[in-house]
Length: 361
Image 1 (cartoon, rainbow, N blue to C red):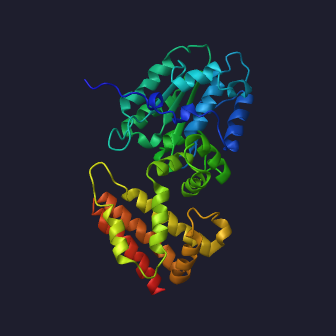
Image 2: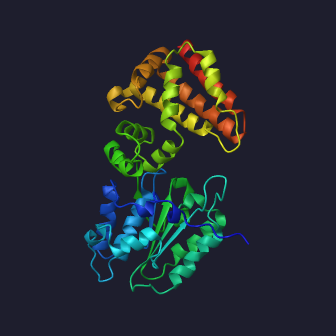
Image 3: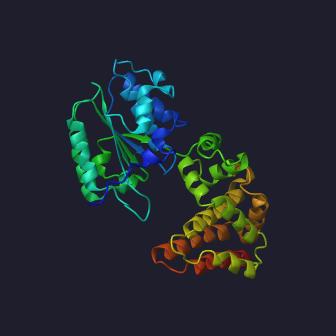
């Protein structure tokens, strides 16, 4: 029999449950606290927004506030100390009144939350609260449920027990069935302001310097979780190399392009192509924004010389060419990933498309 995988928070110090505070998302926090203060707390909250912006962090911070109110005190202030007993038990994953339902493993392992795991909610909510208060569950995320998992969850949402609280996380609105959506209080989330994202990254990426954290915050559009993924994938380095290859466009250093693309030939256990595609699309997007709204709307250069290269490319290709390139990169990347095509050739196709569109303007 296969051993049950250890919960991610047990081994990952960067798991959202271990965040010392919630940075940003003031509207969501105020809406939740206002609901608590009014004494009419919806039993199910739907947290919707892009991946990595802080939805799970919000859910855990809200759970800590709720689980700490045994005496009826609804003030969130006492839980803010790092040595608060409720906070420490939530961090350790040992609070008896909190259940987290999440995917075990990353891509290549278990890609879905098993329906058996979702069914644990019914047993959990059927128990008496360990501390005579609320019982709280966090489902992270609805995107990872199959149809059977959704149906199991729906039964809980339709018939909530007293003093039960559900935080349902969704990265895409379309991943939320209408039957669940209509029974939840919505809380929309978006990316953090740049300074807020950098503040979070100071804790998550202490070994990165100020410029690197700022660059990652720009790349991730204010999503600290995504910035972590980009840091692990060395996305800043790739972004800088893309800028260097585009520096001579509409002329292209073909030998350099081939040398660069050689790195993306499929190797067991290593595939940087999705990161390359994401970085190139971000590079093209920032070039388009410079044309439409000016340099101020883009912010600081992510790497040295980025703005100069993008302005020059924008002048050569024009807005129509830049937008066409953005579309072409997406199509080439999707085909390479979904049809398992040659990664090296896909990289070359992107670079040659960049040259062609600049020449055609």
